[in-house]
Structure formats: structure tokens, C-alpha cells
Length: 190
Image (cartoon, rainbow, N blue to C red; front, side, top):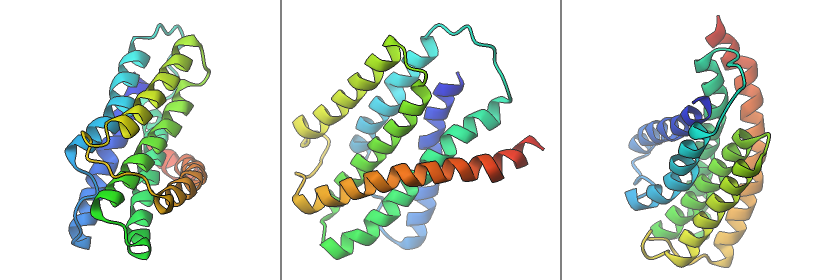
């Protein structure tokens, strides 16, 4: 249940904070609903269902809320960071709105997979198949159904931004994990 809650809370946190940020920036929200459907299905919906139904004989340890926050907040903050960087880079590379939202979708999905990878540890056959299958569906959706999800064709400039920010996302995610564990979780536990 904690794993599933962490997955759902990520989207709630980043959606709320991005809505507030973009309200003050006077910019359009970087996603359209159909795009969020793709990322939500493969990084939240199906994985949370499978992880919640997986047999678990481990004892519950720690407190529920701090455990969930320690996993979800770093991912949500990483997604927000990515989207802000994309909005800055957009003007440099002169990306269209569709190209910008495509980059945001890819980075949001990949950050979701970083969290899913961490939640699946230690890996067993179910978790391994789950991660591989969700990655496959995500990339198949992006490449095979780009018109359905209103995604742009990925250009070389977009690919450079995506690969650079994917690498940076992993670093930011780890920094956020350390900051949350060091500063926020101790305050919640008080």
C-alpha cells in the first residue's frame, strides 16, 4: 500500500505545484490531459495495481506518512525542476508548444520510472516484468501513437534536451532524496 500511495502522491504533488507555478508565470500548462493519461497509466495505474496485489509477508515498519512522503516528494520535485528547465530551454531552441509538451511528457515518464525502479527493489520476476512491460508500453505509446497522445516527432535538438535532462533528473532525484530524508522527514516525525 505504501508503494502504491507513493506513486499516486507524486502526481498529486507535481500537478498542484505546477498549477500554482504556471498560474503565476502566466504560461500555459505544459501538458494536455491525454498526455497525462499515457504517463499515469504506465507509471502509476498499472504499477500500483500490481504492487498492491503482490503477496507481501514483510512487517510494516516506520510510519506510513513519512515513508510515503520520502518516496514521492523527491520524484515530484524532480518533475517540477525538469519542467521549469524545459520552459527555459524552450526559448533557446525555439521549441513549439507541442515539442515542449512532448519533452515534458518524456521527462515526467522517465522520472516516474526512476521512482518505479526504486519501489520495485528488491526485484523479483513480477517486478522485473512489470518494469520492462511498462517501459515498453510507454515507448510504444510515444513512438506508435504520437498522434493519439498529441506528441511531436522527436527532433535532434529535442533528443539532446531529453537525454541531458534525463541524466540530470537522476542526479536531481538523488539530491532530493537526500534533502527530504535529512530535512523534511525528521520534521514530520517530531
